[in-house]
Length: 101
Image (cartoon, rainbow, N blue to C red):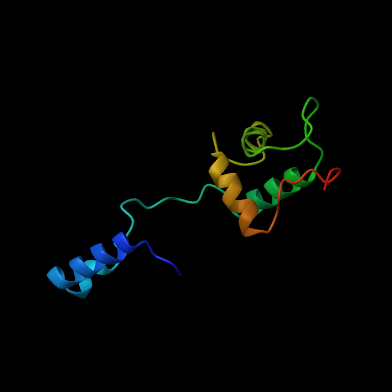
C-alpha cells in the first residue's frame, strides 16, 4: 500500500510525540442506524434488476432511492443514494445497461 511521504512523516511525528495510542484510528463520532433490513435490501435488488420506469433508459442510484420509498414497501420516509450504492455493492450488483454491456 502506497502512502504519500507527507502522511508517513506526520504519523512518525505523532508516534514520536505521543506513542502508539496517537496513531490508532479514532472511532467514528456518530453511530448510524441501519435503514434497510434484509427484506428491504431484497426489494431494492429486485427493483434494480427490473426495467427502469418509462422515460428512463436505466436505473440511477437516485432514481432507485426515490422509487423504493415511493413503493411504500419499506418503512422509511427517505433513503439516500449512498445507502442504495452500499447495498448494491455489498451484494455485487451493478447498474450497467444490460443491452449495451
